[in-house]
Amino acid sequence: MKVLVVDDNPKALLIAKARLVKEGIDVICAGGGKQCLEIAREERPDLILLDIDMPDLSGFEVCNRLKEEETLCMVPIIFLTAADDNGNRIRGLDLGAVDYVTKPFDAFELRARVRAALRTKKLQDQLTNFNQKLEKKVEERTSRVQQLLQQKNAFVNQLSHDLKTPLTPLVALLPLIAKRTEDSEAKRMLNLAIDSVNYMRNLTETILQLARLNSSHSQLKPEKIDIAFEIQNIINALSSLFSERKISPVINTDTPLLVECDEILIKELLHNLISNAIKYTNSGGVVTVRGFCNNNQIQISISDTGIGMTDEQIDHAFEEFYKADDSRNDRSSTGLGLSICRKIIEKSEGKIQIESPGLGKGTTVGFSIPRCIENEK
Image 1 (tube, rainbow, N blue to C red):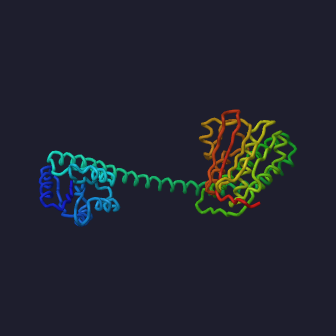
Image 2: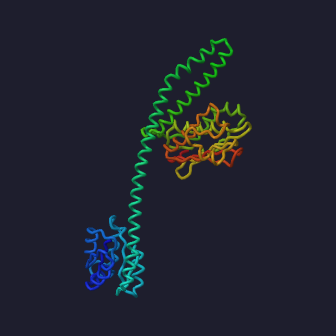
Image 3: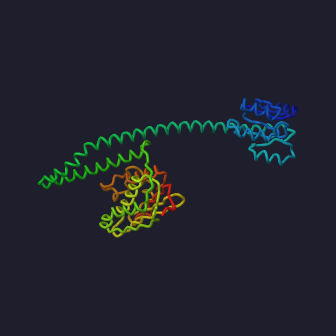
């Protein structure tokens, strides 16, 4: 280990060097603050013993400069101070010194304090090396994961495109064949095939949409929209579903509720969340949509009085292809709706979360997005 001893008193330098050489330490000497900085930059010592009172630069000023340099800021410093100079000792520790040694030196104390500082420096260096190796491994693994995700997205995108092409004529032709078929059993089987083909088409289109959202090349098209207006339009568009399920919609939003965002994606987000709320709410229930602007954030929540969720289901809700239970496992669900919602919010630089008191106690999905436009009435 290499120790730099700094003192403008030649006799003190010799004494300190003699004490430390006995420990097998490589000792370098500097006769002042400026020389200390020059030698430290060149030699990169493991420890600096630094006198406080020097004519060119004080030990405090040298310490400050060392702490400002990236390559030297972690070198431990032990101040050399007079035995009765408590104020300087406190100031030195506040500046980042690890210890102090009083003058005149006690040989055993000096060596003990230097050994302790060097042990700490050795452990610090080992930890630094470990962190650097760990960071390198994390970077390598992250790069590999990113590569695999890109490959997955490319595969999914290509597969979805390949599936979509043959499905198109099936979607068009099977219903025509079913209409022309008189045999009841054949018609039943054709209807099953139509149901499966429609599910496959819906799944394919949803996967393609998710792949587009996952792509780093997809760009948002921000424009000013009134979310309160869009919420009302979606409620109106879903009015027959509300009536069929005997569910009451409640809208409680600031009007207008202006925000700068991608209109198509936000409409889809709202439609997915409101449709989900209807889907999992029992007959006679209520779906409530709330919205307001706060600190440049649009805050929206969609609450239902439906089947609710467990904590475990909430933890997995945004995962791709996750379906919580049998009641959510019907053919109309791909398990990608909430994944798409999360991607839309992420691309909009917002946040989304789900809350539920438990099964049978309803669910609330809330999200926020920035760039709220206030004071426009």
